[in-house]
Length: 588
Image (cartoon, one colour):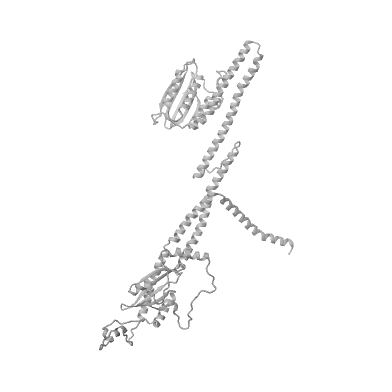
């Protein structure tokens, strides 16, 4: 065989070992990974604890043992009646013997005589002859492995099946070996535990001498003509069942037959039955551990992934971290995953909004500061009072613009936190709008614009105008929209505020008679710092009013949008007649 062939054979022999080792390593990693989770351990241990408690209760409180003992008692009673009848039939009257009572002879007086005829018709005696009974007892008791003892009426032992042997047999007793070591501490403790569990309230079995048969309660009872039975345990905790049956013929009690089981006979059957239960328990425990691990995998693994993703979110704020999506599950894990995804999305949106807001604020503040700086630097160079006055006007305009910007920025930055801290209450829109519109009507301006208010109710809608929210902030929204509409309305125009009650909420519309909104600006007018007022001077508005209004409405779970109001013109064609702002709020 060449070296190459030997190397190939060695590699083939190593392949199975390498595959087994790799499988063992994968199993070890899997067990270590699963065992790392305390939730997995708790699920497995709790399920096993319940199963162990159930099996322990079955083993300790099982009715199998008591049923087996009752069945054994009935079996021994039937067997005892058969054997007692056979023994009684083998008893014979002794006609060749004359029985004299010695005490009666001592009581005779001079000239008196005593004979069998003096007792009248005494009952016939049927004595049990051990030599005649022994073969019968051996044939009947031998196959049953039951110990049988026969006592006479006075409790004297006549026969014991342990001492019976046929012709040619050798009487053998199994004695303990003289070299047998004494039981150790653990063995004695185990025997004590077995005796304590097995004994219960059963009496301890004892061997009495040949002359003390009536020390057995069942033998004493059978000597009176009744059947008796007792259940005891020996010093090893093994159950011994004893049954005593009277041996009688023609209602004459000849003796007592005592049948008893061998120690351990019933316990062996109980152990076999418990061993079957334990085997079923082991199989059930293995299945339960497997199912518990699988169940824990469907709970602990997703939770572990969600926790790891949350930790990554905490460490990596600048870049988005995707939370695992378990929303396809209809259980608490799916709900938790959806809540974490929504929370993380809201967190990132808030962070992006803050960053964008900071950038916008820096940009908006930089413009008036740049203008203010240029004016301040140019002021010393101005040679005429006219130039200096114009520069002072620029400086005052920029200062007012900065003050307005800072006030609006402060209001916008406090708005979110304020809405989160305050609890929403029921707000009566009728009362709120009447107050806001009333204030707008009371403030006289040179534009001559009037503000009107109307209330409508859709079919099937409630009669009230109640919504859940913050009254002051909703009033700020309406005030911003009315002020915005007045600023675009022509001289002597009108602003119309209408509140319409819907089935699932309320809708507020603010209309004006202004030039309307350019189509390209409809999607931008709610952006921060956006302003489109050609008819006003630069810097007169901060561009935060509509953005704050949208923020407030969305915080109330509502929606706000803008659209142009159209009406037919003189030539019949549709023309823009003004702007319309719509606020829709959910019901309280």
